[in-house]
Image (cartoon, rainbow, N blue to C red; front, side, top):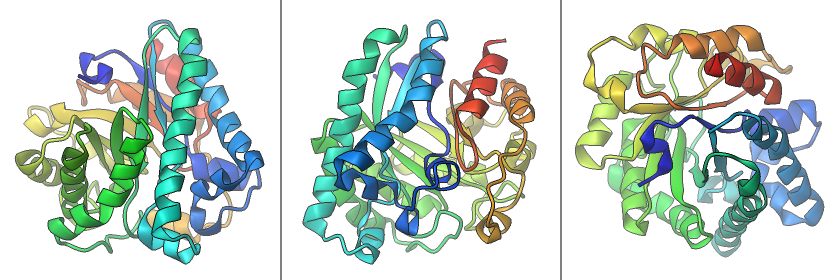
Amino acid sequence: MLPQLTGQVFLSDGGLETSLVFLDKIELPHFAAFTLLADELGRERLKSYYVPYLELCAEMSGAGFVLETPTWRANPDWAALLGVDSEHLRAVNHAAAQMMCSMRSRWAPRLSGPMVVSGVIGPRGDGYVANAPDSVAAATSYHCLQAEALASGGVDMLSAVTMTTSAEALGISLAAQRVGLPVAISFTVETDGRLPSGEALGDAIERVDALAPPAYFAINCAHPSHFAGVLKRGEPWIERIRGLRANASTKSHAELDASAELDIGDPSDLAQRYRGLKSALPNLNIVGGCCGTDWRHLRAVRDAWGG
């Protein structure tokens, strides 16, 4: 059983791609962080990104850490745009998993809680637009390559993040079953609390849970103000949500897409919103960040959560 399921507090990192592009001024073609795995300089830059988050976790008594691979866009369609063939893509995902496993070996002795290496699988299309195929079978077949490569690299679990449709999420959950790994399914929502597909968050969770239940669900790439209103007490699906990686900005996906500058929001306000969700999400115990967040936001979230 995954240690996250015991209810222990787990931290994770923030907005990897936005931090690299806007704060570190690193060029990421098609927002693909996995391109940095191509050389030693890039790999060292990736590893150094995670360090402040691991240090925050080391300072928190009893906290575990979910160490996620930089493979959000390491799937066939995005790889093709970058001139990466399927054989190289498998190798990239495998290498990303092994790099995170190596980091765990170095950092686990410094933490008082367990470390879990999670292989990230992003949407086939744009994370802000529901443009993936509606076919569950097609999604399963499509995402199996990445799931297999991450599994071969030694990850403990898979994470399907920024899911815009229940069909694609369900396909990844089935792909995870095929490779014998637990999976977390994380949906993104618009400002009305619905998925970009128009599906209600609860309906999407219940559809996936009915056919291929993941280890747990999460929400990412949305500000808490966008979904807090749909978290109604007493709904059984709410108890299945354990993870949250929120955006720093209150802007919509369309506004963020059109923005040339990073909106880091208010770290203190974001942290208090996380804390305020404790009653609405009784099983929430895995917290990280998404677009626009960095170690400063996670420090504020950590401190507010502990308080």
